[in-house]
Amino acid sequence: VELVESGGGLVQAGGSLRLSCAASGRTTSTGMGWFRQAPGKEREFVAAISWAGTITRYADSLKGRFTISRDNAKNTVYLQMNSLTPEDTAVYSCAARYYGSGTLAYTYPYWGPGTQVTVSS
Image 1 (cartoon, rainbow, N blue to C red):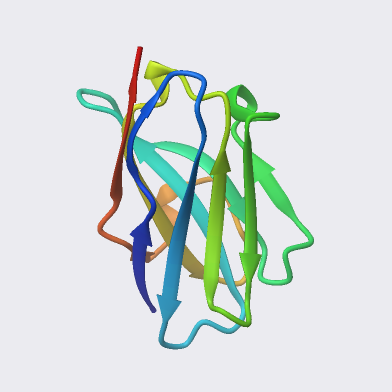
Image 2 (cartoon, rainbow, N blue to C red; image 1 turned 120 degrees about the horizontal axis):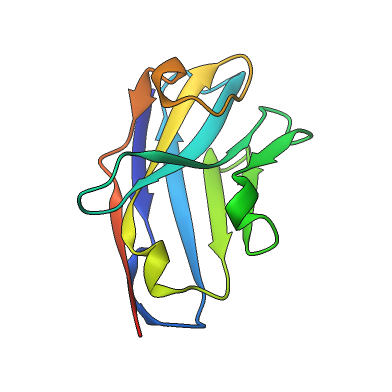
């Protein structure tokens, strides 16, 4: 599975961004996750979604602001981010795994290169 993120950029605090993750290869039955890593910090889980889109998981601190979704016809997963704050500044990466959609980064063998999100105050 190959993954490419897009949609990152510079946004003012309070604004919104929608990230996309385009997948190619053998994508059937893949659970997808979004993770982020801020400068000087460890990678952290953001959100995950099952293959059918019926199960979603979110980091507790992000519930209500971020929404993960997918369109399997387009092999694309989205992350809608609202009410952004400077603390959301990070490189956002999508990841894929076969079966399930966990919150642990090491369970995902396939990763995209990431897209930078910068939120100005």
